[in-house]
Length: 183
Image 1 (cartoon, rainbow, N blue to C red):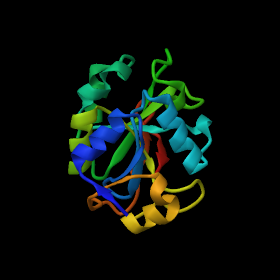
Image 2: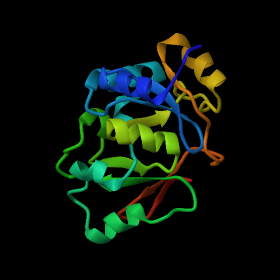
Image 3: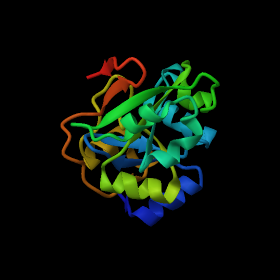
Image 4: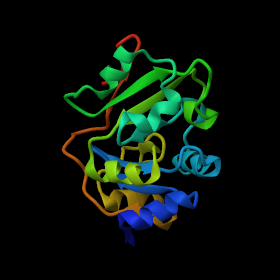
């Protein structure tokens, strides 16, 4: 098993590849969200329905600015407010500006500002990334490099690093309604 450093991970993303990386609570799979073939590869290896959509992760809100057009200043402030645990926000995308491969069958987009230092560093180098748990659909999210490798073998390069302190994947909240979509 060959573990990558940040520079190698950046090069893979820039070349339209996917990779696994540690997040706050589980291992994730990521790629450039504008690279359709990479997004399709993630959906295929996860055996995930495209209609479900995917999360975008970023280091700071400015990286997500193309998709924040429908938000008020107060909503943008809420996205940046400290949270007690990793939080993914579902925001409106009524004009469908986000790629369909990311939105899925929704008029909304799921975004997260990561607090994990490696995810932040990777997003600083590459821009926002797809972030979905590293596991085939229906199986538990990988919690170690060994589990990522057991699921995907050599077909998914792995960024060396450690998980954050969260005990599970991010919670998902609807920004407009405040409704909890995943606790």
